[in-house]
Length: 54
Image 1 (cartoon, rainbow, N blue to C red):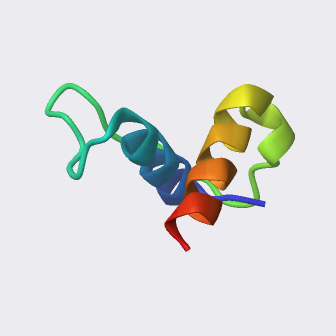
Image 2: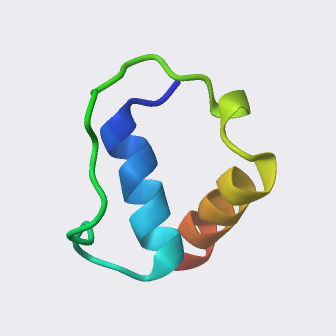
């Protein structure tokens, strides 16, 4: 399970960004968010990138 910071980190990684854009952010932090709630394709892209970086 993920928290909102981990989801933001995934989004930044997929976008090729190092910092959260000024028009984005986490308003309400959350914990224990199931990966199934993320779009599966997005989550798989992130996992694939992590594997390639190793």
